[in-house]
Image (cartoon, rainbow, N blue to C red; front, side, top):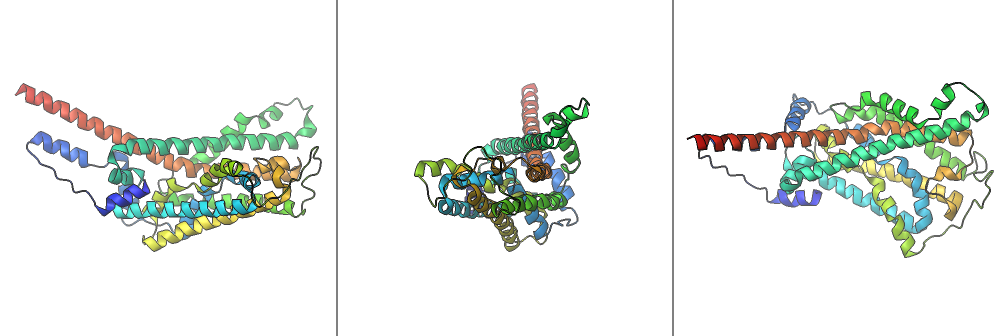
Length: 383
């Protein structure tokens, strides 16, 4: 989308409307109007120069969109590629993701239609596919957000199952509720919904800042176990815990782990609100925002990957927490994941909501155009 938008912006199409009668004039006017949702956002966000997002707050939201539960699978990806190949793939993924974000931001600025979105950029590049692109983004983000809630439920159930293991004979109704996934999914959803519908994206900076605490806590736990500061990471293991450590592996195994690296830096859906709301919007400031976000995520990912791989070698599992002993420290790490993903939920729901509103506006616009065309045909027939 970004490349097509940049190419199309170099030869910006000129619209020529020929008004032969009142019916054609009305139809052309309606076709040129933006969707209702985009118009409302333009009035609310850009009225009286209300761009208040700073580089720090924007980078904070972008980096927290990137850093999620997927970081726990990176040590397993290193086990499949080797630490040398894994490092190269991680840095390449960061580089290409950064370039993609910069291309999208340049496309939005070049299009010069605010508030920018996938709709406005796609409309400039491939207008016939705007609905398809909005639908794909909305479904993808909603699916990821839903997956976050499921992971939250699983983590909290496992955590409380261990914490309440001494109360197995408890006949109270509270015990079954605390080890039920439905309870925690519902609780997480109700807790995070109030902050999931801010009209301005930068207001999520407080949720992102809070999520960083849990990201650092989780990273610190992995590093501490790697250096035996929290005890033996293989304590109580019934099978061989540590595997071999390799610099490279076979090509088929490396290719099978490639998607983990590719999707590790996904945050492109949130670049457009950053473009819309950044103070003193210039390309250097946008580039700095993108660079800070991706480099921060790269640092966290590399620390988790290399330390986790160094701890368990080729025996590291797809979720590194499954390698650790079941104790209170790992339980706290699971709770950190649950709170982190709960706070990340609005970062996925926000772009999904915006794309759904854009779809609704586009359907309404096309329906209105069709109605006017039918009325025009009826009018011509009556004459």
